[in-house]
Image (cartoon, rainbow, N blue to C red; front, side, top):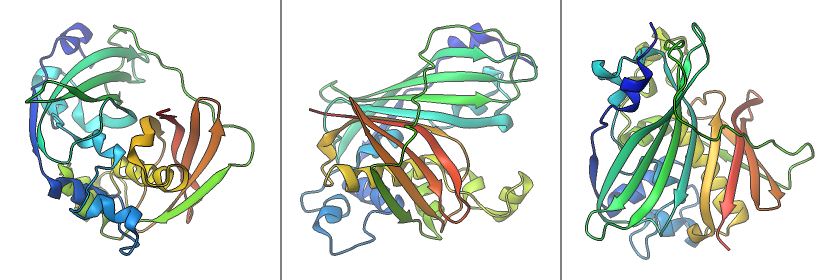
Length: 286
């Protein structure tokens, strides 16, 4: 049954407030694999309280509104929802503590047609409660497989970055921990698909899968390590398309290309030679 596009565009997504702590920042970094070399001063700055910095990709989990699409008033078939794309843009260095407020809205809906689903585009603006300063902006594309035929509404740039047809300029392999999903879910995404083997089998996976945003975070770690000398201030924005799941314990190889204006990248699972992130793009600060 198609959704009511105008009703969904007008849906008031609850404001989210988060009291961010240094522990949250360290836990996020550990969840995406930082600290695999516990003697590295570069990695310690993200997992140790002395001189602590937040990973750029942590923007993805700040002041998140939760799984609001499950609310009946949205009209969405939440069981048929997938995370399609994600982008973050950082406007000032991410804090390691303080109160943040997230304001989320439906920006546009692209109808693929009856029986083919729809894309719902979301925007989240995260501000500091005390100053009102804009910290970061998040863009998310949600694939609603059971909600086609609703009609398109709103405007959004649907351009995807093409990966260069040549050997990558940089390659970085990072192996995820077998318990990576159990760690990463402590950032607030408690979907049992990532923890409960029975739930995973019920939707066709032989065991729990890694969160897509955790895969994104591992790729972000690879980029920070390989192209930024672990300087988080180098990264202004990063966007990516999710193409396949990762199982905890697998090795994620991130391939990177230097391109005018930024960096193109994609990630694949080495053990299965499966591309798991595509159309990746990084914009650097000057």
